[in-house]
Length: 322
Ligand code: SF4
Image: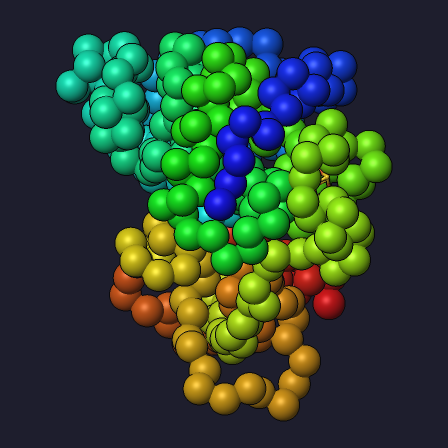
């Protein structure tokens, strides 16, 4: 089905070394730095991650300082990056590293994989970048490149892992190979466009000749669900605003918001803000309340004290300027 001998290692590695973007996590093989960068980059754009990566290590310079920090501080540091489960997993993993590995990031693949929030692809990145192991990365970018390269749009994860492993074995340069594949998917071979004429693997890529720049996307259509949430604003001139902590499961776990009521129907008025997540659109409707706040929660004078979702920040900002 797939001819592995056709993988042009040299051309890809050379292209990467000549074209790589200069990013701070490419100047280190320290596992703590690589781990945090990989998790931040999972669902967040590079340009957003860049300043946050630097700030993170100013606030949590070591795994020990991260593990000793309250979860609320870690969530606050994650504010604006979205998908807050990542921050919770990072905090839990730092404590596991302290308790089980005496504060030293594990060097064995199984140990890396056992940490909360680290799946096989992230473990592959850490193991290859930091410890030179022959472990492939198979994130969304790499999957897309492999599928196009071999013109196998329907290929399953099991086969993709086998293919990725075989390719990395042939390359004999696991860190470089993984980085080159990730870079190719992030730059020339994007989901909605492919610059095949500039691509180092175009001579062997089957998609380059079959579907050159014609609707090349392998993406399935994402079904978006609309949610209608009323945010109840209890505001006191001296005490501030009443906030509640979101439950551990569901949207925005552990973050602070005004009391939220989920509405069963779309209100007739225009929402004060609509926040988009991957599979959901949350339409927020602010309501000023003059009654006593509910029992659960606390008054907050400075919003910067706690971690709030970006959508709530935006809705509150619009209320202030309305
Ligand atoms: S030749 Fe085109 S489709 Fe193939 S890997 Fe390169 S950019 Fe992607």
